[in-house]
Amino acid sequence: MTLPPALALELEPVRALLEETATLTLATRSADGTPRATPVYFAADPSLRLIFLSDPESIHSLNADRDGRASVALYPDEADWRRLRGLQMQGIVGRLEGPEAEAGRGIYARRFSFIGQLAEALAAGATYAFRPTWIRLIDNRRGFGFQQEWSLG
Image (cartoon, rainbow, N blue to C red):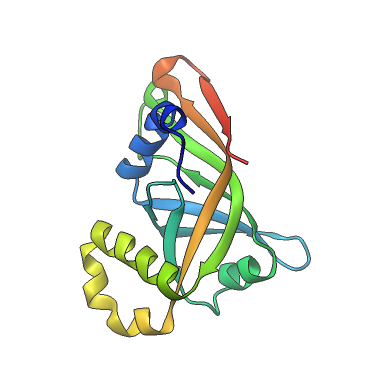
C-alpha cells in the first residue's frame, strides 16, 4: 500500500517518531481474551507497516496467527512531561511469507546492524508486519494533551 502524497506529508510527525524509536509494545489477545503486551524491535516500511522478527511459537506470535487484531504503543524515552510524545495504533498484525518476508527482513536489517549476529535465531524465526488502521499522535510539546488522529482503513 502506497500512501497518497498529501497523507504521507501529513504523517511526517508519525514517521519521525518511528525513525527515532527502536522498540514498540505490541498488544495481542489470547484465545480467552486476555491481553498480552510484548516489547519488540521494529523497522517501518514506506507505507508505515511496522516490521518485526519473532519466534513463531511465542505467545504473541501465536495470538497474532489466531487473531490478527492488535494495538501498538511507542514512546521515546523522556523525563520531562512537557516533552512527552508517542504513538498509539490499532491495526492488523500477521506473518509475512516468501518475497514479502524477505523484503521485510531487508528493511529490518538496514535498521539493525546486530541482525548479522543472529543467524541461528533468524533461521528459526518469522517475519511479521503490523499494518496500522488508526494512529493517534500524542505530543505535549504542542500543548498539554495534544492529540492528532488518522484513520487509514
